[in-house]
Image 1 (cartoon, rainbow, N blue to C red):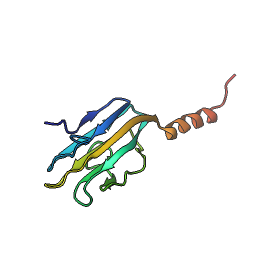
Image 2: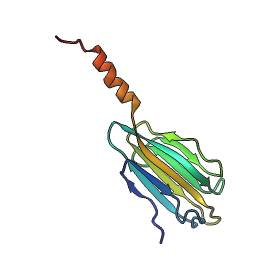
Image 3: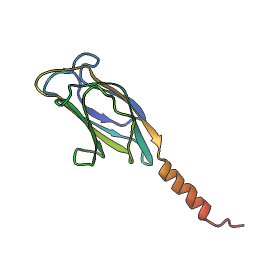
Image 4: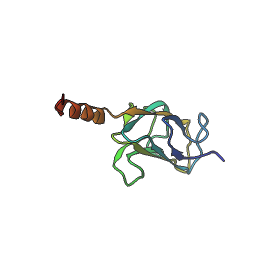
Length: 132
């Protein structure tokens, strides 16, 4: 039985569809939660993407579960552009229907500095008077 989904907490890693690069099995539901350090964001880089159009999907949510805002639902053979979260967690949900399986996907994720937070810290430092 292929591992399917899980909780990922390292600063970088790889997410593979079940059996990748062979065809993923029918009727699969795999959920991945990615959580990085606070004050960081997550970058997803799609290395390979090949799913049955209109029937099999990868849903990506901004947050810790499927109740979070949906970033996008991806299918077919066109790999999505790089995706960057606005916070420190993402939820990925893979769903395959009962028939055709394809090679699926290979996605790298990595933790990156949240420039908005860094700019805020720099701005605060600029606004403080220099005591002397």
